[in-house]
Amino acid sequence: MALHRVGSQYADARPGIVHLGLGAFHRAHQAVYLERNLARHGGGDWGIVSANIRSNHRLVECLRERGRRYHVVEYTDREHVTLREIGAIRETLYAGPDGADREALLARMSEPGVRIVTLTVTEKGYHLNPADGRLLIDAPPIAHDIAEPATPHSAPGMLVEALARRRAAGTPPFTVLSCDNVSDNGKRVRRAVIELACHRDAHLAGWIAEHVAFPCSMVDRIVPAMTDDDVTGLAALGIDDPAAVVCEAFSQWVVEDDFPQGRPDWEHDGVQMVADVAPFEAMKLRLLNGSHSLLAYLGALAGIETVAEAVGRPEFVTLLCRYMGNEAAPTLTMPTGTDLDAYATSLLARFANDSLRHRLQQIAMDGSQKLPQRWLAGARTRLDAGGDLVCTALGVAAWIRYTAGSNLSGESHPVDDPMAETFAALHEAHQEPAGLIAAFLALDAIVPRELAGDARFSGAVLDAYRALNESGVEAAIRRAG
Ligand code: CS2
Image (tube, rainbow, N blue to C red; front, side, top):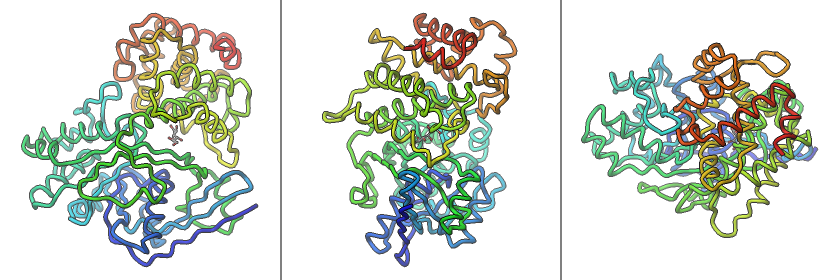
């Protein structure tokens, strides 16, 4: 095996970025770009203070104990591995509900030297209605933050409180950069923050609307949750690092260039700084993430465990080609020169990387939050243009069947989704496919009304659902094309 090692060598870096959501993705994506930046400058102003606000206290402690250094293991394939040591995270904090470091985090976010706050809190961490982007004011963390804004529990609450403190101190605001797989992520987090601020003080909300920049960004790197096999693989490389992350070699970050208080010179670190992220975001969400979700639900129903195993089956490759080429790509308007066929081909190669164990169950979680931007927004465009939607409808049918909590052989799996209880109640109430499909499509927090009301779409989902139950995943895929 060819192992390439890259150490972390600069002496120090001042904290210029606070990050909310110290998960595997942040460690393998944004922190790697910042590591490159700090290495190039021999340190500088853009060290990261990284915090968890909801879960994983243990990781925060673990990084603290290890001097905040960890490894990113990038697999091009089984034979080519790059091992990076990362030192860009200079401080880790846990500001979960017990409040341990909450004040320390808010104090950091209020420092003039901190000019950017980045987020990977997952789709559900913004507490927005997935279908229309309105703030869910009854969600417990948001209700708490409306009642007690100075001790926030949610990500939008943290942002509002820190911005209020900066405003009161006459400190210019930070720029807010969402790095989650949400379409228009900057606009969405802006809306969440302003709506929440309105509950507190209209002047604060007005100040945020006028002075705070919320650029959009598109992030891409496949970073599966660590498995026991990964840990064994690392031990074979001589790495004993409980905070290590394993990922593919590919990485992309496209960022809207709107940072009034300054930013790292990311363009020299491989970040694409652009005027408009929207086309890149839609391309990635619909082609990559949309394909992932197709594999996740159909694969899980067929008892398949990982992405690489699924794309090892010809019927899944045919399905993805058809979905990307006929249903997703035609909904995109890309800058001239973008080669969507080449992008789709590169995705198939990335999915086939069997040095990663990317579990379908991981991708299948939180479907209620993911499907609107992955499948449903494009499906509306497609129907408006009079196109067909067989693969998307099959995906939706598979998702509905998946939420019953078992695969087609009757083996059970957990349904990990903020709406899991609603799904269970719908399955309980509707034994007949027609009623069940109608009830799921009527969930307007997920399915846009125009789409649910379109008989071509609902008919296709019902047909696909019946085909799945009657003849199984492989036959249902064959039927789709
Ligand atoms: C995946 C993503 O879990 C999921 O839903 O589709 O995490 C995907 O691996 C990343 O967006 C790739 O950039």
